[in-house]
Length: 555
Image (cartoon, rainbow, N blue to C red; front, side):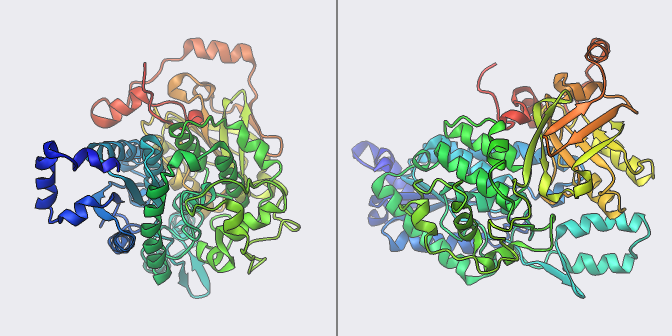
């Protein structure tokens, strides 16, 4: 056992005394030691119940002959952190989570890990840490929130942010806003649409690092606790057979994740997190792979914010397994990939059934023949940009309009609320990338306000920042190189015409190369917004969004 380094031999008597101070018996010490990484929090609604999930996991570990030892993980609630300084910290915590797992796992000699995340950056952060240390590991998430309801309308967090714009436009009263506020987030769990948290939890299934059902079983269902017990038992099998994350997180497994991503219409943040996880797993991930997979992968689901279905509807329709079963018909799933069940993907999904063709469209009747996410390139984004194409109205797939340029999200929100944005405009928000933000803030506030004001079908938004999974409309993020690195987005001026073609995956600034070169010569990079603490260090070492915004290990 790996844990022998902390418990075997005369020289480890001091270590055993410390284990015994924890209340462990000799019998427990002699069993495999399983680290239970629990992101339980009274700050994050998606994590408030994870103590119950952790107890179920530990019961499973004990039933299978192991000794569970729990330790915590931090986590930021992106919704609460939205629209103020807190959002600078959201993405950077992903690296902190990965680093802390590395530190705890290797410092204490665990034989295996059970990862218990649920929300946005916690899921990829834990997967990155697991891939880095490469100890036997399995994910069991907290599950999705139930959808809210007011009168006959189903609600999610998206509706709350869009309600701000509706108030501004005189389309909603404050009394109606309060009714929404009391009803939108109906339970514990990750927010109910196909936002970043649920996207990543579903993709853990697609990659094969979580048991079937992990992405969609509602947080409040007892089935979630049974899944947790099964995960606790299964980690013991993985330890016994020494099956590690890199045995599962292969190139083909990431291709499966991308295919499911396209079919579900997942959050654009998956285009940050999948490359980052792949990097830790030693797998090369090129953004252009996304478009090649999108070309042959149909979009089968329209989950909020792209449509009127929610993750609990996906659960009742058959979940991720049913989606993968449909995709198998198109030949875009590698069914021989190993999973934490110790069976292949093909074995796992063999009995899956699509129980609701309205929620999961058959491949013969997709929403579109191509996937929900597209990577756009052009002279405005030479290294790429990302859009959730499935959440864009048909009329905005191709758009040309004048730039309205802002050097921060705050400036843009003020302009939008001030009525300065007109139909046809292209809002450009820059210096919000990984380095320039720092931290690459989500732009849910401006996109939601635009939607609430009824402008999302007529106005595009382009940024070197990123978007929430709850964002809808022609919202193009991750523009690389970012403005702080001297990318072309730094040189856009008010009134410049910008052409967007999501069908051809292009993003073009209609300015000559000569003019851009002159603007570059005249450009002076603004002073960093934050010069001390973790974010200053993060800004120094973070890579481009096109590389997953991971931290460099060398200069």
